[in-house]
Amino acid sequence: MIEGVKVKKLRVIPDERGMLMEMVRCDDEDFIKFGQVYMTTAYPGVVKGWHYHRKQYDNMVVVMGMMKIVLYDNRKDSPTFGEVNEFFAGAHNPVRITIPPNVCHGFKCISTEEALVINTVTEPYDYDNPDEFRYEPHGNDIPYEWDRRDG
Image (tube, rainbow, N blue to C red; front, side, top):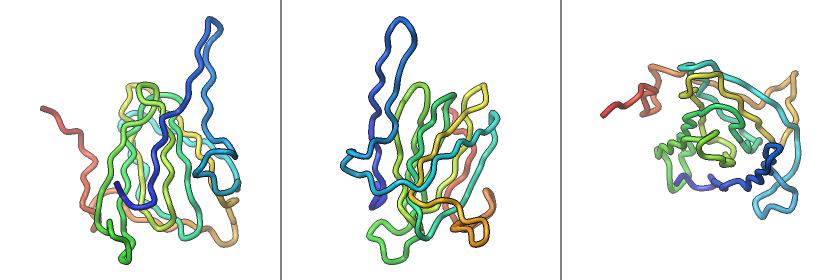
């Protein structure tokens, strides 16, 4: 596991009316602070990545569909520098993935329907000076291919 990354299995409370799932709590042992919450989606097969933040922690939860979330540790001073982590998150695996600053990340919708991510981040988005740095999703120095692996 990349240093600083945390994965928490989420508590799902189902009943005859539907279900409730807690995503982020201020009394979670790994809670840092609240910046903002946003939602993003991806259509089947779409890759959104790569990017990283210098200050911001992400807390990603896939609440509809399934996503393959991939992290790459590009922190040269990290003991896990160069490591890649791959997670399958969503309807079949309700987890929260906490991504520390300077860890590249992206995701691909692997479900047959649009997938929806709720991200609770530690910093509000600064429109004048965004804390967001991007790489192309394909053909870069990150040792990862987004292709499906059949077998």
